[in-house]
Image 1 (cartoon, rainbow, N blue to C red):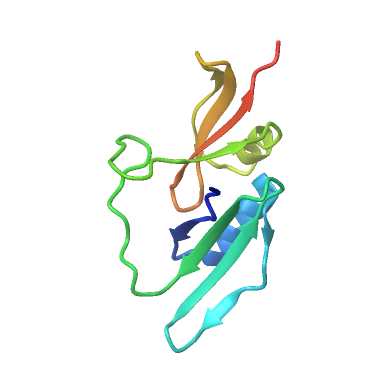
Image 2 (tube, rainbow, N blue to C red; image 1 turned 90 degrees about the vertical axis):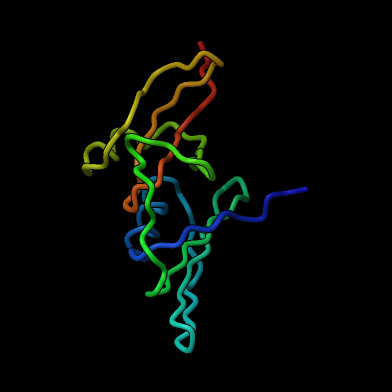
Length: 128
């Protein structure tokens, strides 16, 4: 079995698309636009074959999560295996929540927030 994709509702469709393209190498399809339903979306495809759907509809309510201080039941974060984007994200002013550092299970990782305050874990296997 293969997980087909993960989807995120957003009110910042273009900003979120540009973030995942710039920092994680996602390749965006042409924007899908259904004016009858007020729905727009992009599918981003990553080199691994994983896909992320970013969706916009004006009547979707804001989330109640506090991604920085408290975690809640449900999907907690998206994890990307990558090494090269920490300096660029810091330079561009994105909040780094923790790290970078080595974890107890042998990974090197940091946690950050995307433009919608979705928690991201960026990780790679630590090789000494």
